Image 1: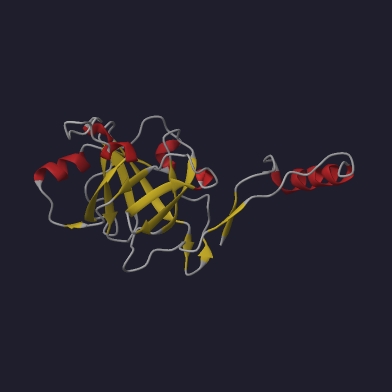
Image 2: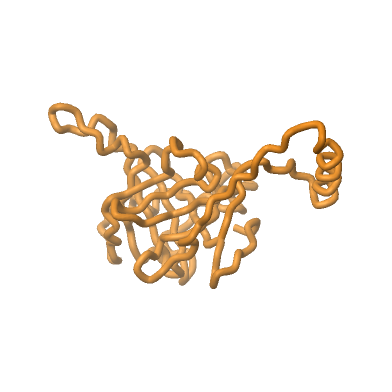
Length: 210
């Protein structure tokens, strides 16, 4: 599976796209085309051994639909925005070197950490007032596992005394639901960004519905 990352056509529908392509072809002899950049995504779906792996979609911090790639490697788990894949310097959305999933039941502190947050979803994004979701919204959205995450590699950089030079607000959680989807959030705010799969059985799902 490939994702196009550059030389994007301005939105405006298929008719506008065809019109723009026609104009570009007419000017082809007068200017140089920019190259298309593609990134091959091999592991685009979760597996039993890697339940968070793959392409996901969700409402990001600026209340727009965004796409994420979660990958496993020898160092743990890392999540990046698809739009950042062509940039080697872009910071990850989250990462962790400890891939352990903590099973239900959870401590009262962990339950409070989840209960005190609001979910960023498509319906909430249309309304500036977000509706808080309960710990158990539907049977499929029961939180079954928790994972500890960080927002940046810098969190593991320690000073000469061996103490982390970064505040704990960079820490966060992944909340995995019973249906296999998950949400994530950090200590610096009270939001959870819920993600849904973009690929199922090797086929792309609707990228608009969240």
